[in-house]
Amino acid sequence: MTTTPREGKTMRTAHVTQSPLRTTRRPTETRPVPGMPAQEAAPPGVSASVPGVSAHEVSAPGVSTPGIPAPESATHGPSAQGPPAPDLVPAEGFRQAIAKLPTGVTVLTTVTGDSPVGCTANAVMSLSADTPSVLVSLGSHSRTLAAILDTGSFAVNTLSWSQRALTRKFASGSPAERFDGVPWQPERRIPVLSAAGVALVCEVGDTAALLDHTVVVGKVVWLRHTNEAPTVLYGREQYPLGA
Picture (cartoon, rainbow, N blue to C red):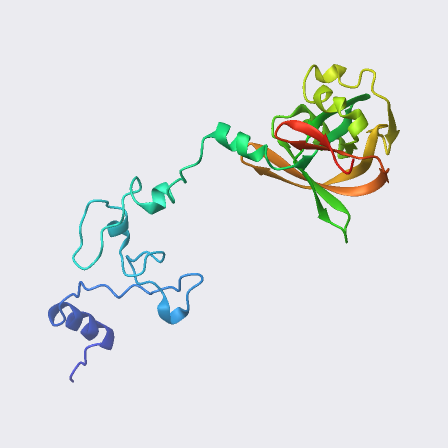
């Protein structure tokens, strides 16, 4: 009687004596990179952010790989320094030139606590008539600006020729003394100068910090105007307009 070896035992013997062990690993499954189509998934060892360049090539500055440009040093080139700075004119020369541009003279007023505060400003312009609004610009370290942003509203007071002395009063001296002897009345809680030929009470809209100044959008919620001739600043002197 012939005995047939069990199938399991025969397979075990064949595996040991006839089939050499294979040391080759199965290829690693490629997974799609988020944001890339499946057919363009980055292969293993390749940075998805730099197609065709492996991770060690990106992170090894100074190592040159044939056919691949060396990454630019972080301390050199346009990406590090940005565009060259413009060759600006001297500040004093700019002040002298800009003084030759005629501008209106205004006093910006608001409150801090229960006390009125204000300053002279000439960087004031209309923004929109459909949505009545103005733009004002003040130095970012201005106390009046801080009070305007804290209160959320302010007034633009255009000075008449007869009250031109207030220009200097609100441009210098102690901020706490600028309202001494100056008639004013509150409108929407904001002090409005009685001598103002044009007065606009505004609520703060958008703001933007630009260089060393802050630009404020004021949405006009109250106004008053008269026929008195306003004063115009030209060459650091004041002149009546329409006189």
